[in-house]
Structure formats: C-alpha cells, structure tokens
Length: 416
Ligand SMILES: C[S@@+](CC[C@H](N)C(=O)[O-])C[C@H]1O[C@@H](n2cnc3c(N)ncnc32)[C@H](O)[C@@H]1O
Image (tube, rainbow, N blue to C red):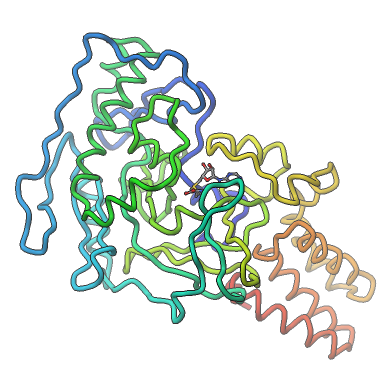
C-alpha cells in the first residue's frame, strides 16, 4: 500500500473498510471538530430481527436539482456533507468520481498543488483480467508475466464516502428506538444518503458499482452500504480536520471498479498507492507474478499470527486459505511477528559479517517462505546481505544480492 508496505500500522491505515466487531453495538462517537455523531463500526454477520420500527419513516434526501453542461450534477449539501463530483475533464467518463464529504475536506483536495492530473495509464493496460475464481467470487488475474514493481492498473475511485455513518442525529435515533432497532434505523438512514451519491453517478459507473460484491446482506446494511463495506479502501491522504483520528472515524472509504475485485491473501503480490494529484489508485506488483496467477492484496496485517489475521479478516467474510494460513504453526507465527525486529539487528550483524551472514540469509528465506517478498523488510535484508558480502570480500555474491535488492527496492523505495 502506499504505505509502501503491507505490514503493521501502515497497513491499518489503508486496509479495506475499517473492520467491525461481531454484533458490536454501534456506539455513536463524537467527532471533536464537528457537531456530528458517528455510527462507528456497524455490526457484521447475521443480525437476527432486522425489522425496522413500525413508526419509522425514512427521510427523504434531496437530489441535486441541476445538471451542468458536462453531464455532472452541481454540488449540493445535505446534513453538513457535500455531494460533489471529480469530473474526468476530457478523459473517459469512467474516470469520474462521486464524493460525499465535508466541504473543507473537498477544498483541501482540490487545492492540492497540481490537482487534477490525468490518471496515469500503464504502458500495457492488458496485463490483467477480471474473471471468476472457484471459491472467491470474481478476482483479478495476470494475463502475462508481470515484474515486481510494475504498475498493473490505475484508476479513479467510483465513489468516496465517509468511512462511518455520519447522520448528525444518530444519538437521537438510538435514544428513541433503543440500541438494536436504533442501529438498524441509522443504517437505513445512511443508505438513503448513499442512494443520492449513487444516483449522481454516470450510468456506466453506477452499473459497475452496483455489480460489486456485497457480503453485508444480513447485518442491516442496505445494498449500497453493503457494497461500500465489502469493497472500500482507505487512504491516509483523505480525512476531515487537521489530524487523522486514531479510530479512523474521520476517514473515507473509496470504492474502485477494478481494485475492489482484488481478493485477499496473507501472501500478497500487489499493493497500491493513492495519488491525490491525479486522484487515482495505482496497483503495482510486489513480486514477480506469472501469467495466469491471481492478484492478491492483503486486507489484514501480515506481521501478526494466523489467529489474529483470521479475526481481522472476519468482517470481510474471508476465511483465508493461503499457504501461510493452511500451514500456520507457532514457528511461522513467530517468524511473522518477529521479522521487523530481526532486521533491526543489521548494524550488529555488520560488525562481524562472516559470523552473522547466516542470520541475514535465514531472515530472507523466512520471508520467502511466508510469501512476503514485497515487504520493506525483504529489501532491507537484501541490502544488508549485499553489504555483508562486500565486507567479506565476496564480489560475486555481493553483486547477486545487489541486483536482487535493486529489483525489490523498486517496490520498497528505500533511500540508500
Ligand atoms: C473486495 S471483494 C473482492 C472481489 C470479490 N471476490 C468479487 O467477486 O467482486 C471482497 C470479497 O471477496 C471475497 N474474498 C476476498 N478474498 C477472499 C479469500 N481469500 N477467500 C475467500 N473469499 C475472498 C469475500 O467474499 C470478500 O468479502
């Protein structure tokens, strides 16, 4: 991820829609810089009795009353949020993005120096295809061999909406209907708001959006919120106010046409960057990918045990069957949990490279065995090995690892 990498805290910044706990109560959380209540972390899984209160009448959320000459609706504000469009401006209409966000956040985005550059187009747009998998719904596949570091596709999001249900009156709703039915009403009201954002889309984008997967059909989410929760990415480049809140409640969820078709693996072979200036995501290969191989992104932290990964994946309805999950042992758990610390020993290893080279080679092998060659740690490790061979006066080995380092540094972008 632009995180550069999938591990630890950075990965959390850019995971799919923030994970939620099973049957967790939707606690309205006050956002400090605004008078809104956030229905944060809605429940997932099967919620029994999804009947809305008899006396509940859904709000009517107004649609923009005016379309501009470029076929894009004018901005309009509802309940403190603005419906707006980033239009492709001469590019393909598929590059339009619909957004629902706070007005100052929109201002921050559009005043980014250089905004709005065209979406970067990879030289070969035909290196991937979306098709069926036997057990994961649709997925993205390489149609030819792709090298580590290569950009596979780039796209603007179809939709950008707050990562939490922001209604402003959630606490009154909960007070009136109680927690269980109040939560259902909050979700229903939020769906009404999202319906307007989707109605503003071009027909092409709306069709693509509504065709995305939805694994939130039984938790009270409406069809649009279900799609948002199943497919949303986050970026630490878009949030309300001066700082990103620790609970991510002021962040946004971004739903993509192609990126949202990428399935999960704890042995990811792709990562993404989000560029504010072109307002686009670029998905790049973390390692060499063979023709026909499926592209995988990690929806969870990769430097944690299999059981922690399992619990992080539960809200996505994913039971991961990657090699690392199937073959997980206490030893592999330890490897994942410790690889960041182990690379911290590099300076110590360099004091006596001959005696310590095996530590660095073992770390490299462990990362390969866990399918984590895209990690920054892997590139750091290759660099350390090449430096150690240099210090040992072994130029051939040094060159081999220098070359490998350069290949993976294309992904890791270490400054050395
Ligand atoms: C963002 S979508 C990915 C694309 C999706 N497969 C589709 O058909 O559009 C996420 C959903 O895909 C499925 N999925 C993703 N990774 C999976 C995996 N490793 N195993 C099983 N299902 C997976 C789950 O249903 C998950 O909720």
